[in-house]
Length: 262
Image (cartoon, rainbow, N blue to C red; front, top):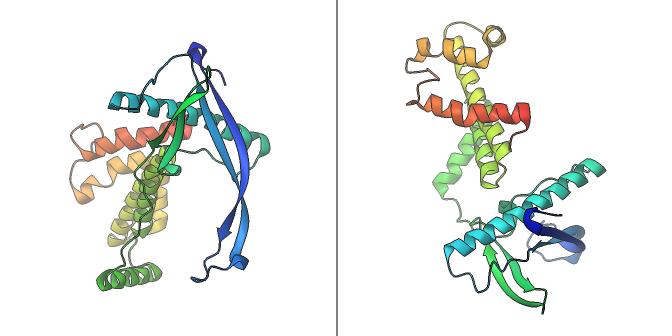
């Protein structure tokens, strides 16, 4: 794939079979393993510039290497999207560096003599580490809250779950999904909150539906909360958290929904 400035990126795909282990217990039994097809790709950034002539010794060189890697991942995602659209195989999706292993190997290679310099690039700090066992108090709290969910005692559980899902997407580098889930969590929370306020006033969910149909989300946000809860609900006031949400989440959500913004 050609780039500007006479540079190019090539991708070499290969496949291999790994053994997936089914963990029914701690017994290492070959009968509990399944062959799983995997794909590996070698990304080659080709340039006639001697950008790295020695080991990476400063942050500027490391940043440049990270930019080259990001450019390769971008082109890889072009091929993944092409594969998705061409084959309709929905099990394939775009990747981010945070989905990869913690480090990746690289080589600086001179095609004149094929001499190369190997190294490792740190991609992210999301190391799979051994988790500590839950304390008795933490275990009891989890058991108790599972019952809260089962009994539907907390109407805001779904909003919190959506918000935590947004955090997971953000950590994985899936920023479009993170914004959508964050906005969904916010709207779910406010709608649930208003429903609870309506119940206190003797109103029901049908009246809530009518209110949303009549004024829309932003209209409801401006009309329904300040008189009941007080506070500042002016979206144009740059000093408020509500304005920060509107500019950083709501507007981005609209750009994603209406234009596929990433």
